[in-house]
Length: 205
Image 1 (cartoon, rainbow, N blue to C red):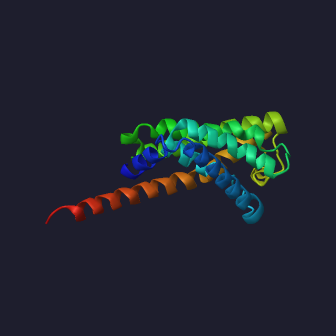
Image 2: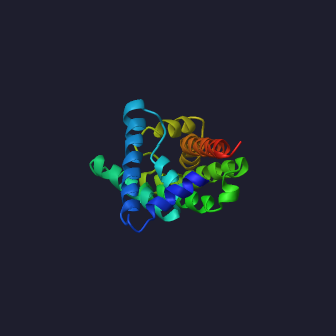
Image 3: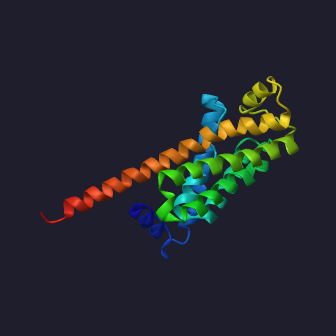
């Protein structure tokens, strides 16, 4: 994708040695804002703390993606007064950046609908597995946050805490990761169409 390549090359220029660090911090702040919006304003059972992590991984590669994930959870922890409910999940956010960077490295296949679906499903599964493992092992299954509503609803159907934590995160992450995946893919399609129209209009009649 021409626009993505141009963006990457601009921020990898030797004249901008701190550009990636700036983008990582900006993306982490964006994640923290979306998490606050979802958890404290809209009161959704969604995390929305990895949207920019995924974007950074897709555009700039797995390392900026991982760093964005780490910075995000540390920042949220600081903003919330070190309550201890976010830093244990930094590895989950980092995994999203890693997956995004590795899958997007294959530019030819990544932007096909099939690979976009595989991308979303892999993000969902990995986040659900890691998140459920951490929430059960560290917090006993509940963290006192909005996603607990889904876990408790599943518990009332007879699910064990482990299965409820996992199944809840499958549903939550499918929506949570679906939003950025769909938006990034839509932006890609728009940029491709715009590039083609620009080329067509510049061709001599």
